[in-house]
Image 1 (cartoon, rainbow, N blue to C red):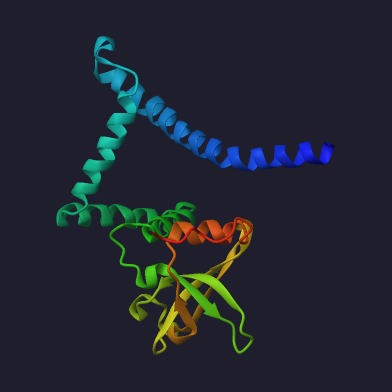
Image 2: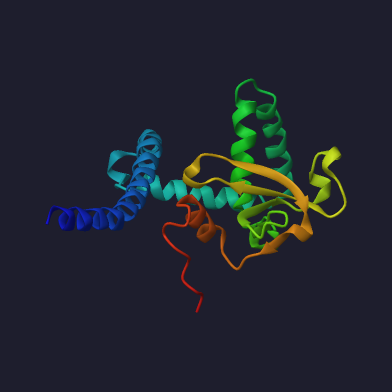
Length: 200
């Protein structure tokens, strides 16, 4: 009886927790944006003009406007000049480039070869691992890595404990019909959640 109860409690938690954590993160983002931007709005507008949620709306509008401006050449040059300071500032230069590269990886403007998700064959063993193409352009690789028809593939370890960036021949990888999000979920749980649903 106890085993029956604990089994269903665990099933319930596995069902609820992803939804609860997702909603909590969205709530945290909304509250944080409202708290920070709301204070700024209070300084510029009378209290009678302010309404709850205005900070979040202003934050989303600001992100939208910045996204539009980043298509302008002048703004791109100004932003690049500002980034140079971050790349040469102690401590920050160790953190910012990694975050920048990671977020750029998911940017809609980034062209993703193979949809970025590939299966990598390990020698003649018949074993395959899932990976993500992080760099397919030889010109963007270190000079000593610019061998003919090689690409850089990131092989993640499950449960977010790291991974390996490996230079390998393009012929050693096979494109997979999976989105980045599907592949991330699959590798994160070591396949415990099972394969993704077939596309209709």
